[in-house]
Structures are given as structure tokens and as C-alpha cells.
Image 1: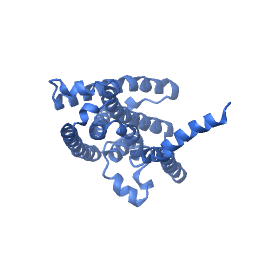
Image 2: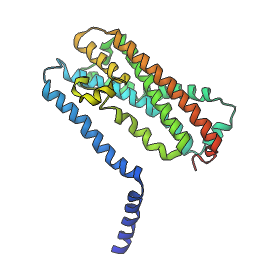
Image 3: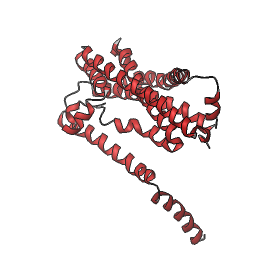
Amino acid sequence: MNFDRMYGLFLRHFYLIKGSLPRVLDLIYWPSIQIILWGFISKFFTSYSDYYNNTVGIILTCAILYDFLFRSSISFNMLFLEEIWSRNFTNLFITPLKINEIIISLIATALIRTLIGLIPAIILTSPLFGVSILKLGFPLMLLFLSLYIFGITLGLLVSSGLLRYGPSFENIAWSSLFLLAPLGCIYYPIEILPNFFQVIAKGLPLVYIFDEARNILINGTINYQNLIFAYMLNLIYLVFGITMFYLCYSKAKEKGTLMNMGE
């Protein structure tokens, strides 16, 4: 073994990390988010150990709902990224396809991808853990639809970043939902968060969606006010996401960066 050769390769990767702030932030980001999320979960169960009468059922149900949200967003982004990776991005935008047609087709395809991944998970929870998310009944469809709208909105915002900044924005596609996980109050009520975080969290539809999911499972009742408020926020974010997509497309077209996308 030659030490100089190994040291040379080490220096190459060391300077790549040292000279790139996004790489450094990426290394810091994931452990920090994991610690924050599980810190809040641990704090909740330590303070309210008797809050749930069916802990496994509630945790698994919330996990499935969150996975549906995650896959909705990622599926939309992946369809966009695959066009970049296959160097088909330029061809996509010189076809007669309109922007709204591209968005609608990606939304429909993302739903199929999401369901393919989610349905087996839902089926497995019943024989393995005795938990069926279908016990939520009709409100489950309302929760899924609300989560899907928010997931697609995140997908639109990330895709807007890809249009504007290119593949360098790719890491955001994977990290955006993990950033929102602690603030979304997926496994615990909003009261667990510090006051500053509570103010931010109340602006997210996730808080009201998951609070209502837990409310249905624990109390067997439906608070439609939570669902309505979540849909109102979703509508605002969706309009913002579509607007950003159009603006970033126009900016990329103006600067000519679409031609280099995928290179």
C-alpha cells in the first residue's frame, strides 16, 4: 500500500467538503434533525406516558400518514429529477407540452407511485401488529387528500428550485420533509414544542392533520375545524407553489439555464 496515494485521495475529498458550504451543512443537517425529532418524541413520552391508550396503533397510523406525505413529495420530485438524470430535460420543454399539463401529469403519476409503495405497508400492519389504518373510516380519505396536496406543494417548490438552480438543489428534495417533521407534530401534540417553534408550527397544515388523526383514534370523534383549517392552509401553499414554479420556469428560460440542465 502506498501512503501518498491514499493521502492524495483523502485530500481530494477533504477539500471538496471544506470548499463547499452545502456539503458541510448537509453533514450537520441530518444528525441535528434526528436529534431534535427524537428529542421531542422522548420528551413527550416522558411527560405524558399515559396519553395514548393504544400507543402502537397511534404511532403506526401516524407513521403511515407521514410516509404517504413523504412519498407524495418525493415521487413528484423523482419524476422531475429523472428527466434531469436522463438528460431529457431540454426535450421535455421543447415539446408542445404546456406547463400546466406537465404539472398535472406529474401529480397523477406521483399518486400512482405513492400508492404502489404505501398499499403493501398498510396491508402488513394488520397481521404483524394488529393495527389497521382503515379504522379511521371516511376521515382517512380527507386526511390522505390533505397530506397529498401538501406533499405535491412541497414537490412543486423543490422542482421550482431545480428549475432555478439546477441539480445542485437536489439535496433539498430529500431534506425538506425531514426539516418539517419535528414542527409537523406527527407523533406528539404541539404543546411539546418550545413556544417559538409553536408559532412556526401553527402555520403548517401538518399540525392540524396529525392532531386530528390522533383525536379520531383516541376520542373517536371528528373535529372538522382542524380539517377545514388544514385545507385552507394547503390551498394557500398550493397557489404559492404553482406561482413559484411558473416564476422559476420563466427565470430559467430567460437566463437560458434550461439548456444546460442535466449536463
